[in-house]
Length: 280
Image (cartoon, rainbow, N blue to C red; front, side, top):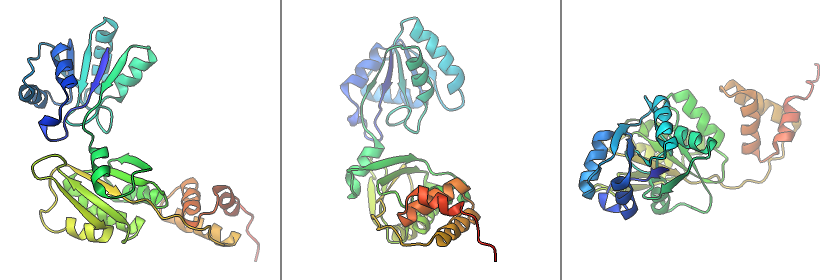
């Protein structure tokens, strides 16, 4: 059996009894960082008799082949990443997909989640949300990603590295609006846990203040307020599509973006964008 085992995102005391039992009874433990895993096992007082192998982005493809052989042989493989649930912005998807394709048994041991913890303490709506993982590193790609999400009514959750947090918040303020409510959650469940809430413009200024942002970062952004469909003529819609395309989006994405921003159906925007232009 393949067991996806969630590990603490900070405080070791959050580890479950099932996690300790699974580690103690495993035949193979695949760990994103074997040194961190050994430290976790020691903190939990677990004597690991399993074969411990590394499983990270650089060797995930090849290691999946090896671990699949272990599963076919009837051995129990426990997969752990540095924090949280494997495969959620962490290694794991490839072996899960491979095991499902061969109908091999697999399960998960639930545990701490930075996504859900950040949502719970953010003070923002949690009835509908979307996890977007890490934003693109390049400024242009990041801006286009946020532009495509600007009209999404769901609460949005992102991971980010400390040294890119200020730039990301600035980009969010430009795309979502300076007054959009958000929360920056830092070092969740750890000694120096901090949650800073406020408009994106204020959070961007806070993050850009010297060495303020450190540790593991989760950003939660409120969804867009519902808007009444705009009353725009076909020519105006076509012009908006052209302007958005000039900003770097593909025509397809530009049509979708204009539809989201105006509240007008994508079908209507598409028709306007492809309507024959009147000759002068």
